[in-house]
Length: 320
Image (cartoon, rainbow, N blue to C red; front, side):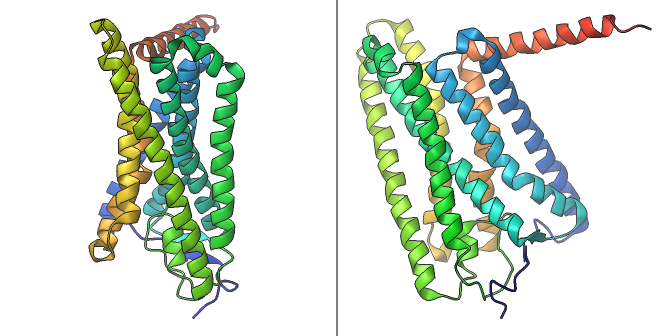
């Protein structure tokens, strides 16, 4: 059996065996990837360019879009390249980088979703104190803390996982390098248990964040239901429901992926579940926010038409 010092590359799980299916998967993944780039790119551009959206809520949404772009760009391009070129290879350094960046963007996004729930809680339950509790320095600090948490989490797990001797094989039963699949290749029981202990500790922190989000929304819904104005209730729900939908999608797919029993595990099911939690949320999040938020939709339209107008103006200035 090879050890980790002799492993120079890993073999990822092929999405399909037949060449026609591989090409079909390539075009499907390319469509999803371009949709995610377009949706998150439009949100980022609209929030950055429209001064009316320079508020904490949209600042956090801008950060969420950037994290979604990073998350889906970590996994899909390599999977598309492998499907297109009919290969399964990824270098050792490339695998380590993929694990690091995927954990970084995923954990930073979850931290940011927790911060966003606090933002909604203050905005609805303590509106008079919103400017005091969430000033420009406060919300920038919270966003930086979310990114920093993701960085520390990714560094800890990547360094620990790739310091463990690997001697089972170099075949990863996933379409991207996932830390759970890397641990299956370990030949050191003590090192394996140490990393598993870190993972369970991380799960406890994740559950703590989830409890905080749930408690925040219990207070939010209590406050909303006490509002005398129907228009006020509608506005509050329109700003909270997209975030709640994104959190539910993110948590449900990730929990099912990592907490399902071993008896339910199979290569095809693991592939489907990993696709659901690594690819679907970054692609769907812009749609969730765009459909419910009228201000954001107006900003995206204005940005789009401004770009078209500017492009036509530039073309008219070109000599013929």
